[in-house]
Length: 538
Figure: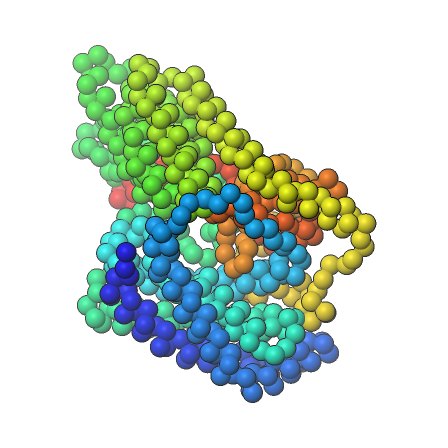
């Protein structure tokens, strides 16, 4: 597999312009630091003076490190699929890393830089995504093909900050002050890139599904699985109004939703009724299979479920109304496990899909697709997940013993939470203006108690979505320390495991960078998209 020539040409062009982006960012940051002393304390003024002085003498080195980081990250991004194809399979053991408070503090600053870029350059990022998708021939925008996304830029800025011969606290202070100047510089750079591609005659790709905003508001709201009322969609689809052959037809936003009246359908209309049920199932699956949050290879597996759902819906159309039905919970659990547990080289996901394929073969031969049948299928999936957890715990047995010894040691220690030698205060980490982001729930009154309660409710086997090393990862909790000072997690993307200190995990949670990952309702999301399409075409 090779990178498309058009995309490679775009990448080379952007890398040539990268030094100017950081040059503009650094100059704007220096201006901010020079105007800020009146609002700063004595220690902050000293830090700002040190940064300005070092930037004056080491600016070329900082820019070179930024470009080198961008170049390496883009190289890895473009060769990721090739690397996966050449993967030799899962290892029998994985490495172990200890995540401490200082590492989490770095991740917090990087995450705030990402939020600043996504908020300020939201429209430009969306537009550039459409153009880069067209460069690789993905005209439905099925994935993010922009190698210069916000996460990449934030990581490169952190690499540049580390080129300054100053303390880690000074480097983080530079990141904190440079976040907004970089966001503004990138907004212009992204817009200029789109203009160049448009000038070359490139037709941007068109979003097949509604893409949510890229900013922090969306990422936090998506954690809440707000149920969409399916009865309106069902009532419209099954009522069969004249002039509305499609479920995505016009529905006045102010009109009352028709009630679902299945039993009143006359016998002569059964055939037409069945056709409308079938059309609705097709529409739901079309929407579901375009969900960008699905794991690779999963859409093909879910497509096999369409005739099963149709068979069950013809027996009982009300099944389509409730995401809590076992049939949908089976689909949701399968999608969840395939997403969170990729495994080394995708081996864990491939094994899960093979197991799920055998389950579907058994379901196919059943004459009736009842709730009891899918409850049995869910149990089989859950047993498979428990078996996988036990295997990972067995592989990490030596690590668990090591961590227990460290857990005992930390429980006897009264070491304070590090603030990187006083050069950085955790309360100064909010780099995004209040009007650009929502306050995390953990920052509101009573947040400390809620965070401790959240931590106490974590259980072995749960999957979490954590921000680590500049990006979001899925991780499974293998073991909580008996003293509550160390938590051992397994990486969902490989066989590595890493331990997080209690205070570091609390900081991640307080900053909105740690969440329990639960199965989401694919039916709910698909129905919401169909309702939006129906109301927008009214």
